[in-house]
Image (cartoon, rainbow, N blue to C red):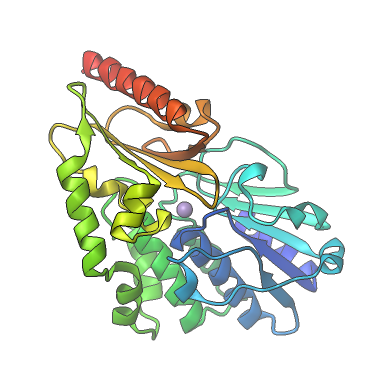
Length: 318
Ligand SMILES: [Mn+2]
């Protein structure tokens, strides 16, 4: 069983470095820190580091570590919630002695000694909980681990709502929920928003565009971000504002990100499969939820055209 093989490998190393993907979401940080806390509590002599950069949305989850280059060559590197090398935060992952990947996205690239890739998990945090469950006799789950793992489960499943949720997801949710952490405090970080933020949502509701084929989309440029004083992080996280609409089967958000010098693109769907389209433009993800970074607004126009075509084809097939 791969969960046991991974534990065996962890036991062989004194130093473990865990990496997440660029622009990490709560599931990504939850699985990274959850795994770190789990290993640390179970093997206090090991040095376990979580590297990379936080986003505004994930800072509340816990501190990340600063690790110098010399630490890598003797370390076991574990990569969570990301399938391809170009999306891994902190490229020093390559310097590790051995690498393990734990991911619930469709497989696009194989580059580790040990890869646990399984799309049947609704969240990478569900995989980390499974890793704990399968090795319960040797691992200690703490309150702080349970807290971040629960955060990842909530966000990657839309609070246990998406069709990726299984009976296992709910059971594993119950396992971590039982632990002693402040649920209200957690929700306040994940779900509370400001009046400015809400007004921005109102603007989206009044100004998104949609086609007769069932494609809905919103373009959010820098001017708009400045006007409503919201970050690209927050804005792109609002993509599901266009979900659950009778007329719309696929919905997308295009958000300018000055820091990245690109336009963040999110694809969501309850019909056409979107990850192939994301891959065509250099991205990837799940069948009904994926994303990419577009270079400019001309590329955005092309993506909209392709997406609309996909919707049209899909409707023909119904
Ligand atoms: Mn995830």
